[in-house]
Length: 309
Figure 1 (cartoon, rainbow, N blue to C red):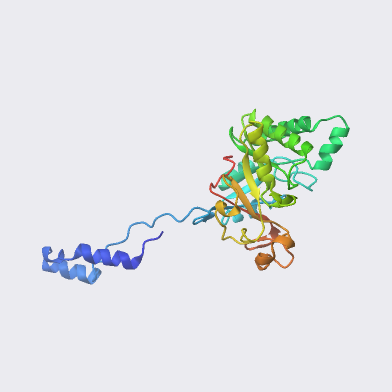
Figure 2 (figure 1 turned 180 degrees about the vertical axis):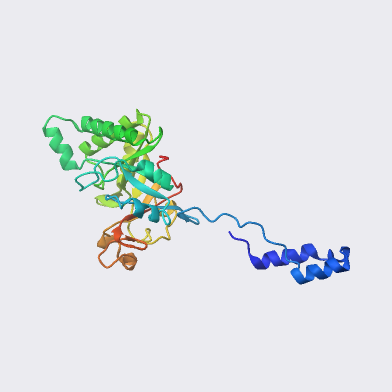
């Protein structure tokens, strides 16, 4: 909040009322010429809100599979407080463009949402046919993520989020893979998290579920380590669409979230009809002032959701 000139003037008049009579006449005249209203100079303004801060909601962030470039990241930090950071090759990519960028991004002031790509069900089943159980595959992928986090210099207790792309209730092999991954990360110096869908889907007639609730139920039932949740829920409402005016995490409908991805690129037409106008004509969500940089928008109560600085 900045100093309000009018308010400063009123306080100056109140503070100076009656003080002129204590001055010598010649000093009164000189003071009147220099400062006829006897305005007290305002002190230094209070600090502006932190980068990416949204009053009542938290901090804006984004995630993207392709690295935007060093200079672009520096400029994006004028708008966003934290960025998704891939430890492994992102979904659909051939290589990881984020590798080796942590030190630079930390110097630029970024907070982190640290991500590791998870296996799709078809990949889990393929490995199973080749003799690698879903649990063993999860442990192997966790070891890869932990080694990458160490190589990037992420400190102990950083939350590593497994990217669970497929939604709905987990199949048995998916659950075995995912929970083996989170337990293996929990056994390291890092903390486990999962990026999963908070979108309700019909599980049985009259029964609705989302992936987040399924994961939490399995963790509780098996008495496993707590898993941090990064919720992807872009249905409008509750999601506001492609906008910097983020909503608080409570609006997502899931308790105890670390972060909420409220806008995706491209948008899903079937669930974003009411906020379609907030997206570009091609369905993507573009960064402000960067018409070629499409991204997913996130919000979190912490400017460094993974605690990775």
